[in-house]
Length: 233
Image 1 (cartoon, one colour):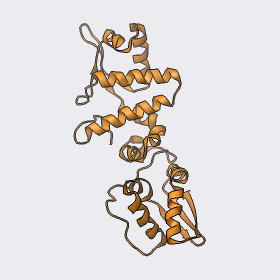
Image 2 (cartoon, rainbow, N blue to C red; image 1 turned 30 degrees about the vertical axis):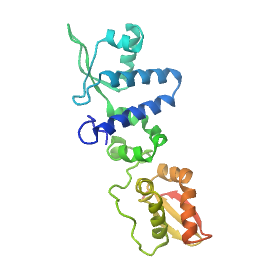
Image 3 (cartoon, rainbow, N blue to C red; image 1 turned 45 degrees about the vertical axis):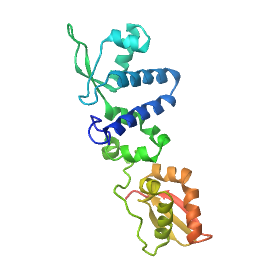
Image 4 (tube, rainbow, N blue to C red; image 1 turned 30 degrees about the horizontal axis):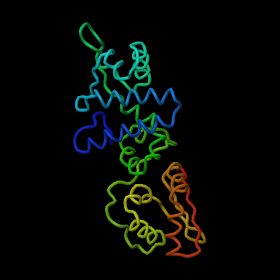
């Protein structure tokens, strides 16, 4: 959802999403990377033009903003270029500072492991349109979740169908983000739910299994529950 330019309908939310994941990423790193990422957040907030994807500011101004000397600015800006978090669009010339764009796709890739710490709503917004979700390796941590599920699951007479309706009634947004794509593959002494990937399966196992078990107990008391990732075909 975060495209090259975070503008247009929903643009404000996408800006906040980008700043949020940068902040969350920073807080998971050592002090050096925390400070470096905070400096980029400050620079984006103060001087980045979201509409034009342009960051054009002189080193002396950056030094004042960061409370550092120009040598530190040169070092940090080079680090951002090397990480592809900043992309040089026009080199500096006499009377003209370097023009940068923001490497949003790379920032998303590098911070991806932190998204679930913010919440499933952010994961749902960011996952479908990121390059990693579209073309990444088969074990990528972020998967595209089902979109457009705006109605309660149908009463189809199946055990998982009844459990799904209870879970949807309890928290529709959570159900849409994480549970709508689960597939029931066993209904003997154990209800087995398959997720599309290992990340989704682990997340549900850790954070939502108890909630599913409580709903299952209303429909089929005594029945066990297992959650696993679908086997690649």
